[in-house]
Image (cartoon, rainbow, N blue to C red; front, side):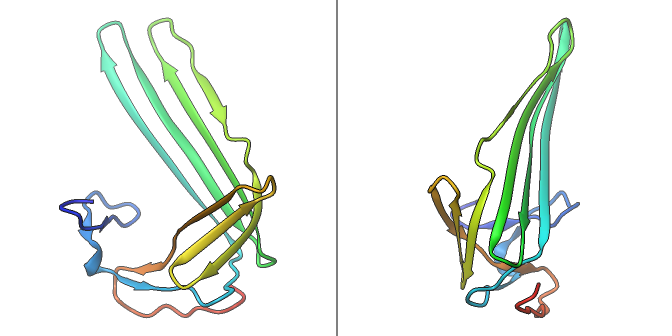
Length: 133
């Protein structure tokens, strides 16, 4: 966000662009996906006596039967006589529902998370959406 405007960055790019430069497309009601998506972020610092790296890795896998699996792991590693560590989330999956610009995740433990959802296309071409994607 900059000046209350949403900005987006394409995978592999370093610069953010105003969201209006992208074409967004809502999900068809009850759309089901069959794919996995992941993200890894990290940050390293170097200082007197050693350095450190911290980050997290997250993956989402969607099945066309309406189920999803979600994993998230944080990690830290340091030099100069300090050891590394990891931590993982205990929420692993459940059912998902996509409609319009909304995604609802209902984890197997009953936790519900609702968030924004859309397909992005920086080239402003309509992407084909099928019920089997």
